[in-house]
Length: 418
Image: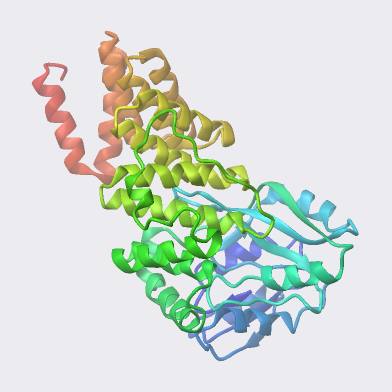
């Protein structure tokens, strides 16, 4: 681990691994709180490093102190899920694996809740991190695989890591966007056509409101991966018109990093949506979800595609997109909610009720699901059930959105239901 001022989150993180790992190596990059003392209480070996605005440098320094055969990398705002530990123990006992990719869940993220991260790997002398932010071992692993053909890359099903660091409050409190931009801009200055940094920095610029700069980088990254095949006409994507019969063909190429290509298409979909230019947004999402990547990573693409199709009135297309999402992840709460919304719009009230109830079962504090459940129950004449759902919605809204609670209460009163 590398840490700085993590006294709040560190105990939970280290508590999640203390009965699994044989040693804990913590590299402190300048804490002024009790981070180091807390780490030592968990038996960690604490070392110190002067921060140089480069995450890879810090991670590589931490690797110097590792003595174990396998290395698990966590950040202080992450925890290891207890159910994954037996699988981890089993997989590291196998001789063929060099790296095990793990599924990480972004807690509280509705759009892109999962990512695949290379966080478990052998203590191999030629594995190292590069890139200043979102530090990766991938390039060094690729180099090893070209020389040592005996190794394999493994994948573990199920969520291994829970990450809380990208919730809005945390981002604002720690100024994460500015820190990330500063680190990546230094790297970008000397690697202006690196598709990975174009993807990450471009997406970050979009989140920071730098729309033009973000789109330029995302398109640059896309061109780097697929060349000019889809961009001979610089306006090609903006001219695409969506229809149910439109197909986006993907030819597989072992030299293409499809994970990065997915992110570029996905974030361009977001960018065009923000510009209210829906045809190219849909085309990018369609291209994204057809790529051969780990299915869980496509949830955001299918969900956003469904949202746009719904806006354009293609309710059946939207329904198919949402249904695909919940087939990939049966616990995808917003997928059930969106299926409820599109089913309601299609007049499929029994289906809508089932979908809203599924969303509520997964998230009992889902005020909007209760509210829309109330609407559908009212439409089918179940007034007592509708009022009960509306009362739940009002109570939940009062905690987080009192104006909506008041509006809903007033609306029900004007309808004579209260």
